[in-house]
Image (cartoon, rainbow, N blue to C red):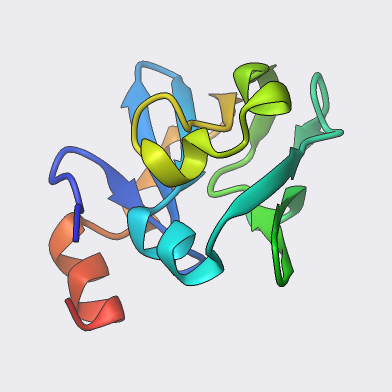
Length: 126
């Protein structure tokens, strides 16, 4: 199971990469494995400002649809458009080409409430 140590994680199985006040968000390798083959990623909140834990989109797999929760408050400034034609990138490269959104974080202190890789491993029993 791939759980990069340089990322932060949420209880909802999103990962967060921090670059100044811009964070990149995707779902974890564990989450994509549980969902199975991903067939569609929908994000209709581009250019909107949302609060932490609000739904920013959905990910659809062959057997289920799951909500995606924003890990921190901020403005969604970018959507990974490659996922429109190739949603399977989430399965094949969850922490790389399968990223979902970029957010301009409005409260960086919220990052302190996210899990470390070790915390996330404990959550999923890895």
